[in-house]
Amino acid sequence: MRRALLAALAASVPAGIMAGLPPRYGGEIAVALATAPGEPDPARASLPAQLEAARALHATLVEVGPDGQLRPGLLAALPEAEPGGRAFRLRLRAGLHFHDGRPVTAGDVAASLARLATSRSHGWIALPLSGSEEVREGRAAAIAGVQVVGDLELRLALDAPFPELPRALAALPAAVLPRGGPPTTGAGPFRLSSRAPDGGLRLVPFDGFWRGRPYPDGLSLLATDARRAARAFGRGEVDLALRPEAVAGAASRDVPASTATYALVNGRRLGRLADDLRRALGSLDRSELARLAGGRAVPLSALLPPSTWQAPAAGPVHAPPRIGGNPRISLLAAEGNRALADRLQVKLFDRGVRAAVETVRAEALAGRLAEGAYDVALVSLTFTSSGPHPAILEAAWGLGGPAAARRALQRLGAADAATAAGEVAEELGVVPLLATGLRASWRPGLEGLEVLPDGTVDAGDLWSVSRPAR
Image 1: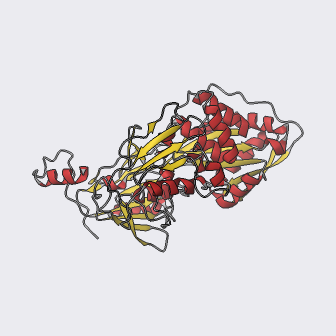
Image 2: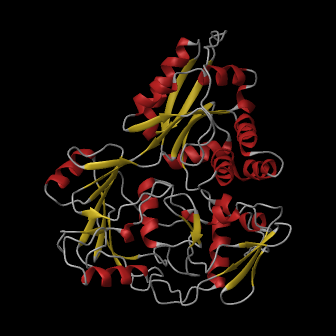
Image 3: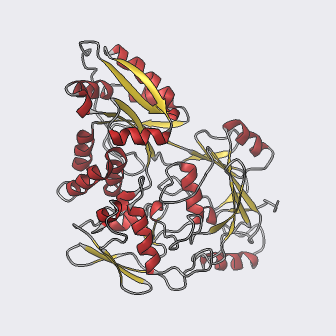
């Protein structure tokens, strides 16, 4: 394995001339996150902290490297498309195991995809597979298009050609879980050791990980606010922080801006007013909104955040005239978007619209969106995909649900990504506002840090020059 080879080489080279080779295994790594990781179920993870925990515990069939290129994960080779592009062949590596010792089989992959088809957050990944809709609607237990050919081989049949399916399978929610096992049991570099009362997790290395045992003897994922994170850095208790702000005095770098925030205008409820509202919201100074968001935020003028696709810069936007009639609307937002909602309330008032802000919990917001019980809603999506085609499906699913995602899939077969993204935004009444990302701050002596395109860090590649075991 790569890690075992590097460790053996490091042991034979005198200190001071190792030139980038990792030291011996050992020590502890502590990572400060903005929120508690909670239940790290990859099919349900939607916040950066949850995704970071899922990255440590789970493994996907295909991976996306830091350079954005696809490479095999649990698969022996990248999926092969059959002639016509309506099916892919997949073959697992031999000798794979889950944390509990069970072998990873093609049946586990099929069960994971069927489970994913019912995911409220990430069902878009299974959407191209024939028969996924029947599973999502409860009319079937298994996806008809997922055929188990042998213990290590599958065939995935699609309703229509979707060349980017391998990239969709690289999204973290598509990680493979054992049939019937808990969502904390995976095939990733670490396994769960214990939970803290505040929702933090302690993980220990998984010796059976296919790329080799991770370097640290333990990994702690901690939930901290900015002040506590800074103090913990000062006391040497934290090695890496993945938070909206950089830690003062520490080395830092930007993490891809993968969380996009949109204003969703309900045309069915507002009628003719909807177009006026979209023009008014589209004319806002997004740079000002990004500054208001705090942390690291960038203006967003297209459907997809820059982590998935760098759209051409938008041209100048001219403020539309005031909206007549002094209409009154509701502005629905999750609790974390309250400051942005208040700012939009002021801006809409300047355009002649009186907006009453209502904040709800994230779970309640999802229910209201599904029911169409809103006038204008602020919606934030953390993207797990890379590349524009999977990201368009993810955006359509998150903003409009399964039916909108299916229509987006059809558009992708008939138009380029830019056209399809614009049509999805127009259909759903979406006004992109801003994209936010985290910053990675680390202490001296932490090595091996690489940020993946989805904004997560592969903690199994981290190692410490001087961090002792605690």
